[in-house]
Length: 414
Ligand code: FNR
Image (cartoon, rainbow, N blue to C red; front, side, top):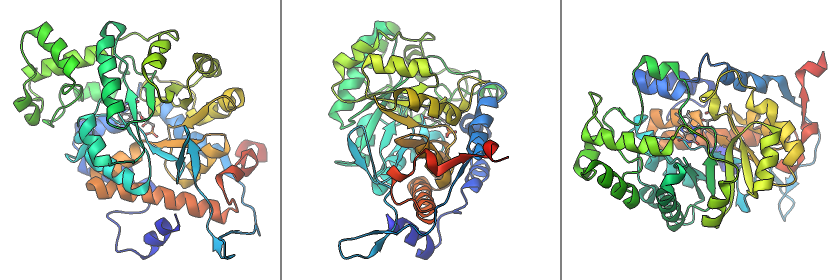
């Protein structure tokens, strides 16, 4: 782990700055207006998003002094231990790659680049259902034994056959945990995309298109309904931004299935439990009542997340609700966190409030836009190095020591 920091100091020049607050403006410069609008854009007036970021300034880390360092077997001092166990898997850092769809919009190397970078740093890759690369190709790029999890946009129940096909392909490709996103049964009210007339699934800038198109059950469904096959030759050309091509019809069909417009019920989760034999994690939990429901539903984890403020406006900050949820269910399941993580100190604060690990979202997508695989790796290494040094200098030798006493509320100081 130390090597992340050493490399930062002593390696050749990085592909772009180590200053994490600069990644976003740099990425804006290289992205098209519509793909920038998609990645940065938020629901409504953006208030949930703004609160997500602001919440981190309301907590401050309390540094401790003269704490004896950890040592190796020969008594040599060691840096802090950032390792953790999530869903029964040991991880070097409390970080995973948040599922982000259609990554070829940000860089034509897309999910393959991100999956390779994640594996090289030991960070689990969570593949979005809205991927622009097939789950099998992403698994190959991620590599044998690299931790990877699958995020499900859960098809409407009349398409259980498609759900089962996705689950069995994910299992066969080595995705060990299932993340079920509950906050996106329909896409949010996103003014930037509407201003640009942009639906990333229907008009993705002529990228190669995957979505669910290599799924045999989806293909059969599409042929049955539309009377013709999804055209694989057209797929490499992408969906034209001008009007709905035949491939666009397939994208629209897929969108109708995975964003049916109405939520599933808590009882429906029994179906996933029956057909998925690994851990199940519910992504998008913001209320204590729902966290308790998740325990009753028998899942292994939740992600306290509001989708980075992209789904509903006027919500609480995700960090603000985290401690309340941890107090209620932290002993019963693994509580993961996302929405607003931008630097090492943010990760420490989420861990101090009880998160087992955080999902990094927009920052790595900015890295992908700026430098493909190297760009994602740079962002991940920078976040890991920043976390490690921040813990070390604040006197916290392992993540178990980063508890509620490691932070104070700024409001309580005055
Ligand atoms: C997302 N997110 C998301 N979540 C999910 O479950 N499936 C998906 O396909 C996507 N796609 C997606 C695309 C883009 C462009 C963004 C920015 C986000 C949400 C993501 O997993 C995570 O919850 C947020 O990114 C966290 O917010 P921040 O930290 O990125 O602001």
